[in-house]
Length: 227
Image 1 (cartoon, helix red, strand yellow):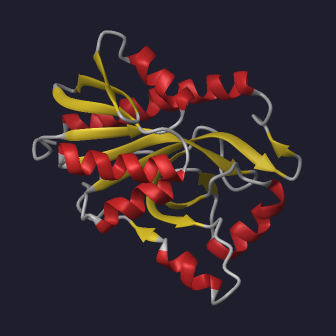
Image 2 (tube, helix red, strand yellow):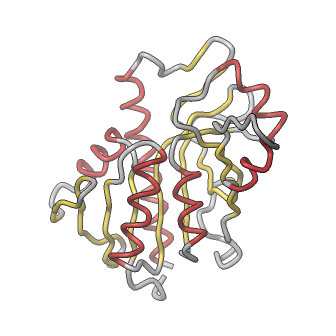
């Protein structure tokens, strides 16, 4: 994509960042106020991988920081997400078209107004039809916590959601306010159902799944940048 002169890729969790470091062992590493930065190339195009940290606070702060300091022509967020058992499969890639921050409790007025305020639609109309083949364009719900089994039926009924994460909602909201072109690609690393999450209290399994997801997502971005 020749029109994108400055590409910044946000990576949220520490485990996801470790995968990027393994995939780009020879890249130049420097520091930001939020963590590490890696200057490298994908498909002969310069990109900056930026460690944003986990959770909505750091996600929002680093998104604003990157926009202000690097003025990216394209901002990308890559990472994992949890899938709702029976609705999605491990390894499925979500090209996010809408984000919903759902962990808002409003008891003084209409709680739906607060949910709507932090709901963001991401413009994907500019993407070529063949971009990110195999990815599903879908919404994602975000909260500052892992998906709780007991909440899944409500998340499906209320938001028609299939996947959830921690950071996408904050990243999309800030980018939308700033008029920043954005892509969010999240790969399903684990499933959560009535019996809990298959990687909850199993960090080793999550790290294995995350490595697979991150390699797949970076490969998809490389292919996208060639075209």
